[in-house]
Amino acid sequence: MKTISLLLSCGSLALLAGCGGGAKYVDSTGPNTIISVDKIDIQDWSRAADQMVQNLLASGVLDRSERQPAILAVSRIVNNTSEQVDTNLLTKKIRVALNQSGKAVTTTTVGLGGTAEDPLAKDQAAYDSFRSGGDGDPGVQPGYSLSGRLIETYITQGKVKQTTFSFQLSLTEIATGLAVWEDDVDITKQGKKGSVGW
Image: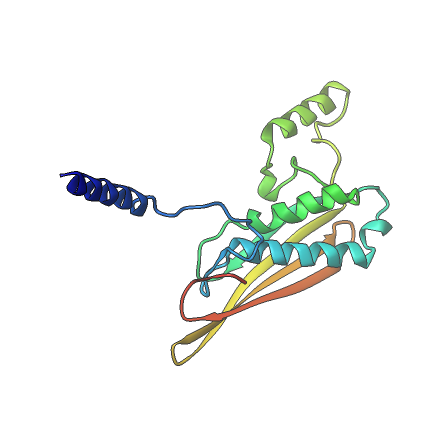
């Protein structure tokens, strides 16, 4: 009888252990993240953003800005890939890194079509300008605009698929309309299906 009870207890423990799912936390930029050949993964966004920030800071463009730190606005990032993505996954990482570098800040009161990332700040700035005798202009205007495009190309050979995601960005000097910095980062992946490690 004791043997049967012991076996039932062991079986119950094994069943509970098997139902745990094995979920765990991993470093978003570490070697244990899942790689999807046909999708932009979190490590792809991080890698592209890191390379572009390093390239932009090394170019010296922001150091030559009349206003220090330089003021940037984020314009349109066109997604030409086969998946629906939030381009903030790229631009926010770039904005945070530039802000922390002390070389640039990003306006949240100027946006495409008159929209603003932070409508409250925009309205308050316009109100303050109007009260002080101004024309209601919502604060300091950006000197640069960041725009870009995401492009996907793929090829298959047998059961192996290779996908390249191209992250293209341009920094335009608003006063002149000239692109004063551009970068193009390619992330290429091969495989039959998602795997762990990169």
